[in-house]
Length: 328
Image (cartoon, rainbow, N blue to C red):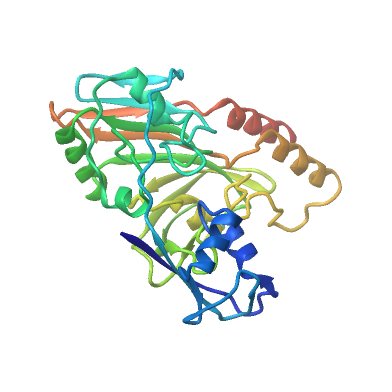
């Protein structure tokens, strides 16, 4: 089976070799793999076969048709886990920042799934459409967190529990609350971001707001404001990839420290001198996006009881907030 992608080069794009551009703008790509695919005719530009050295131009349409490789073998690994709750049907984990949720390209070990397989012999093997689309194996994973997002995840131990939990997430009856430190002050202290999300046409590694994307809604509420940053509470009505990060960037309040969506750049005015040094210090303190999955709630798939869990902010976010309260 083949994966089909299209990438439209944005107008005004500087000339760049096709193989170089695709290597930096496509997930799981290496230059050798890209060059081989171009030579095999699996990558075409404007409907024609080209060489790897082809110089892309604005508005070029790159079409990619690649055979889907077999998913990687997943092995159990003895990695410490913070288990918040566990019974015979499920467990709730507090994932640290820096841990990938499931094995995928370049991350075949050291993931949450590797750790879960060592911790529990019983994990759901249910596959979702997204698993098929991205060719991944993730036993027990009902929902995921980005590598550099910390916080709470529920894991299913059997297929029935997995299915029932997944339905709650799909029907938006589960409770998910995040805390984030973001750039800027808000004019409205609460609001709703309703903007469809899909893969960026110019960079497959990114998600973007696009009319052709899937319905996505995020609620926000400001908890505390500082000179140039804010602490916000967020609720997900939908659960799209990178949803919070893209939505906040879309309304010009990117998550502080977010390399992918503008969070490591100064996006507010008046940051000079002492404040600029403060920002540099804070960025060193927060090498990731300052985003934490703080609360998780759902109906237990077997007992039907309402389950609610809360996780304290991680040390890096606590330290950052302490600095902001004392210095801004």
